[in-house]
Length: 182
Image (tube, rainbow, N blue to C red; front, side, top):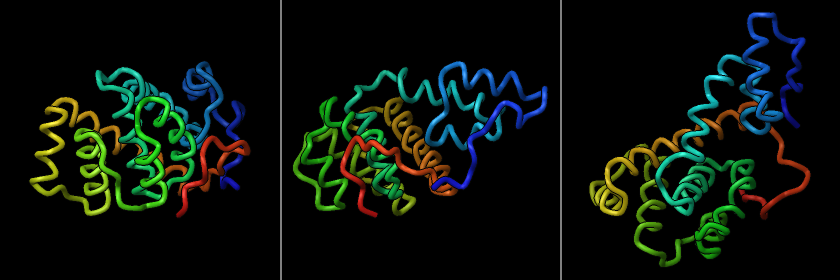
């Protein structure tokens, strides 16, 4: 059960109506968006960055979805996991890797780039540091620009995980994937 009621237009003064309307123009906010809409200006300002990291980076979808799953697993965020686990498998992340991440089991042998990204993200989020060897493997696989963007993407989803955790955003009734054990 979420800690916040649904935000309604009448909850905000005239000075925030344009922001509220701009967010709703792309659809009803869900997940972390259902939280940030309680600060309409913040919600509006978040839109271009969220759009860029989800749809406009020049990185294959298998890697962006894997980065999101890594953040979800490292932060025990069932909401994000549910939204992205099936998508990740559909864009080339092996079901064995998805299952191992979900169950927090040793990772299967995967293509070098997927393994490098998974190890990099888990290490960074869990220990707040990245060993030189882990960094080198990820940098060799992705290069500077893509690794910066993938790191930012994981941070963005860490922020999303914090929003859904702090405000107890519930999973949708119809689940897309097996529930993330936490």
